[in-house]
Image 1 (cartoon, rainbow, N blue to C red):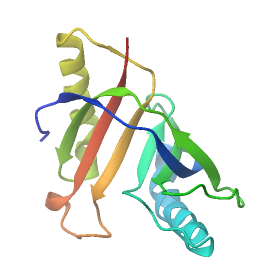
Image 2: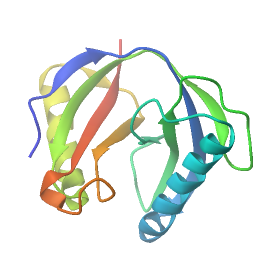
Image 3: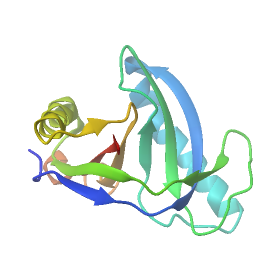
Image 4: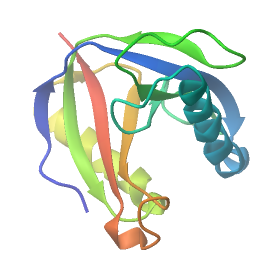
Length: 154
């Protein structure tokens, strides 16, 4: 289930990220440890997340996922190991929130993509998911909230 989609203008945001290219099967194995790597790197530099973790997919997933696992920060992070500093630009996006387990994300993405098309917008090739509630915050998948964002061209 998704909330009614809307068009939103985002603001620029500093980030820390790790770039990953993994198969669908590897996704669940690398996601949690990579979040741990990001958060421990921030902590070692005296920084804290300035918002929830998000996955910036550089293209729509196929048999592999090419993405940056990111976290917003209030001050620049120093590159350490795989963790890199980033600057997330301001942009216009189509946004909704998916309610429920991650298995429902492909259907939710299909719904927002249909909405984008019927509204006459042109999506950029990338997309991102922001994990507001997740298994770490509540083990009940019914409570999970994933914000879906698709940048728009023009």
